[in-house]
Image 1 (cartoon, one colour):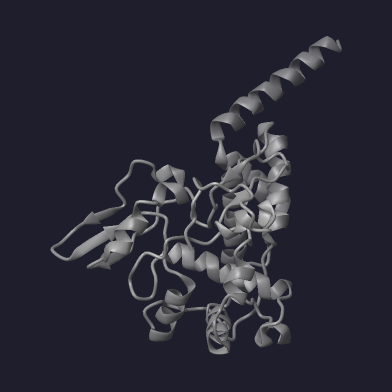
Image 2: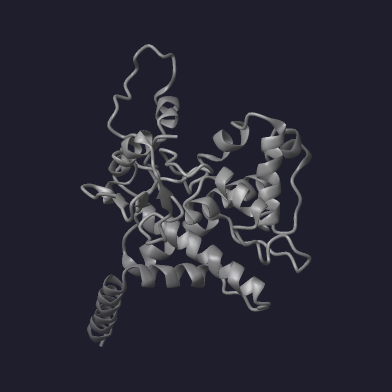
Length: 294
C-alpha cells in the first residue's frame, strides 16, 4: 500500500481517530520514549539506510512510473533521486524503497520493521488458501524456529507471539528481497528463492525479541554514547543482534553472546567517533577525581 506523508491527516468527518487515519496511510507516530522529537515519520523497514541489490523491471507500465515518483515520501533519503532508470531497450532497473509484486510491478509501498503491518497483511488476505500460502512460506523459510503455527493462525482468527514473529520475519525477509511477501511466496514455490536451511530437521532455536533487543540497545546507547539512539539506529541494531544470534545458532555455537554485551557492541559500532570521545572524557573525569581526592 502507498506510504504517503504529505496528505492532510486531519479529521474530515471520517469518524476515525487520528491513529487510525495515520495507520490507513501507512504512517506511524514517533513514540515518546526518548527515541526522537515526536511527530509523523516514514515507515522504518528492515533495510532502511542499507544498500541492497535492486530488482530489474521489464517494460514497466504507467503506474510504475507514478509510484516511483512517490519514493521520497516513503523514504526521505531518496529525495531528488531518479530511482527508475532505463538500462536497456525494454529494461528498467529500480533502486528505490518500494517492493515489487509477483507480476513485476512496483507495489507502491513497503513493510514496517516495528510490527505495525502484521495484522493488516495477515488478516487482509482474501482467501483461506492465500492465508495458508503465507503460513507455509514462513514455515519453509524456518521462521517459526521449531514451533508450529497456532490453531488460531491456521483458522485465521488470531495470532500468538510465535505467529506474529513468523509473520514479521516473512515481512522482513520480503523487504530484504525487495519483493512483496506474495512475490516471495511465488519465488519459494518455484525454487527461484533458496530456502536452504529453512524448515529442515536440524536443531531449532529462537532469537531475542525485537522489543527486548531495542530496549537493551537504548540502555547501552545512554551508557556508552550518552544519548538515545535514533529510531533507525535502534531497529537496525536489534536486527543485527538477531541476525548474529541466528548465525551463531546455525553454526552450532553453544556460547552465545549475552544481550547486554551484544547491545553495547552495537552502540560502539553505530558511532565509533562518539564512543571514543565519550571514553576519553570518562577517563579524564576519573583522573581528575583521583587527583582531587589526594
